[in-house]
Image 1 (cartoon, rainbow, N blue to C red):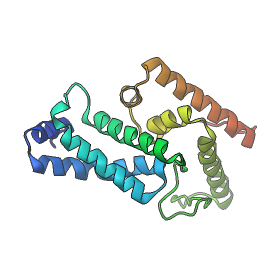
Image 2 (image 1 turned 90 degrees about the horizontal axis):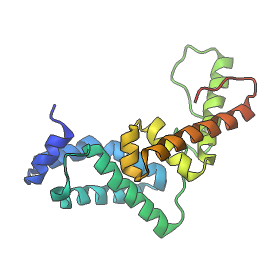
Image 3 (image 1 turned 60 degrees about the vertical axis):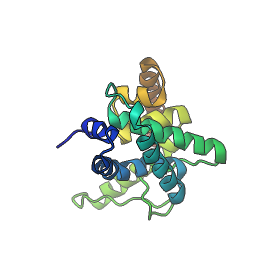
Length: 194
């Protein structure tokens, strides 16, 4: 399979097929990423459209020194932050929520091998974890979501946020520590692995 970076090089030579492949490859993931910030389908779609438009317009400025995904997510994140500043009503959504899920609906676990009491305990614990993430200050929540939900590398988070590597690692560590403290308050006797 051709790499993102190779496709982007082809886009720089105005290969529209390569551009379409990149859009199809990243649109679903990018939509989920942006929707967590906007919590509005139309706003998320607008930001995604603008992101890919900027990728095409800025194709000449792309350099292979960075992964394509890092460059793409940086553009999307900057547009989402700009949208937030303009609208001042950006709301973070639970990292578990689906588009068709009620705001406070408890998610179902797909593994049917749990006993009913285990299923209830696990569902409650996951619900509390997502609530705890939402209560984190934005500076911690943002990097926790990038690292633990979107599984971006520390280097990608550094590039996207513009923060020094030490700050990225510190915020992730401190955010996880706060999550553990919050989760312990829900279940003091339980050992929580965050």
